[in-house]
Every structure is written in structure tokens, then in C-alpha cells.
Amino acid sequence: MHIKTGDTVEVISGENKGERGEVQRLLRGRLSGRQQGQSDPNDVRVIVAGVNMIIKHQRRTGNVRTQTGRIEREAPIDISNVMLVCPSCGKATRVGHEITGDGKKLRRCKKCGETIE
Ligand SMILES: [Zn+2]
Image (tube, rainbow, N blue to C red; front, side, top):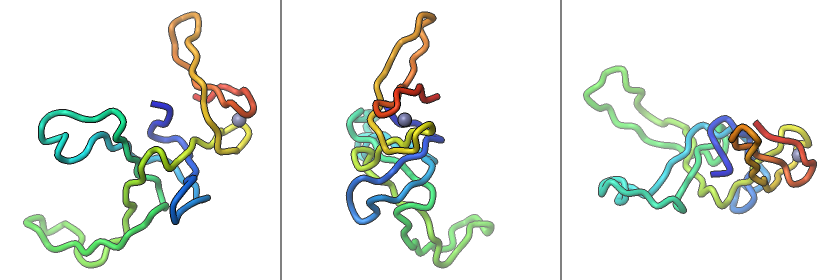
């Protein structure tokens, strides 16, 4: 996977195109797949902080501490609609993968050539 939690990404298609934010969560597989204990590695969505906000109407549940009413929260975005933003050059970029001598996997920006932690 070329994107992970904590990365900054840019939305490259859809109504939020051009918006950037930090990846808060990666969601793998559809609900049905999860129920069967399977997940499709190609079906990955991301929650990006402050991007793709929806208003959710939260009903009171058993937990009295649960916030109720209108809650603004991020809706998942298909991972194919976002690109990693390189922390070095600040551009949305493709990343290449490299294995270092000690077996560590590195990501490298294809635009500026810098490694990405
Ligand atoms: Zn770069």
C-alpha cells in the first residue's frame, strides 16, 4: 500500500478535487467482505481529515455520552481518488518503492526523488 495513516494526501478526482488533508484511517474491504472475514486488497478507502465532510444525524444510543444531533464528520474516499503529497516538494505524486540493504522498505517521490518516511 502506497498510502498510510498520517500521510498528507490530495484528492485528485470528484467534488473534493484539490483538497488536502492528513489520512486518519485506512478502511479495507467492503462491509460484506468483512462479515465474511475477507477483504479485497483493491478495495481500500481513506478517511482524510477535514475532507469530504458529511452531516450525520446521530440518534441517542444506549451510551448517554454519545453525542447526538447533527455531527459533521469525514466520509471515506476511495484510495484511487487520492494521491500522496510529498513532504519534500509539496506536490501530489506517485511513489516508487525501494528495499534498502537492511531490508527496510522505502517510498520515494517520483517527482523530486526524495525518500518519504
Ligand atoms: Zn517530492
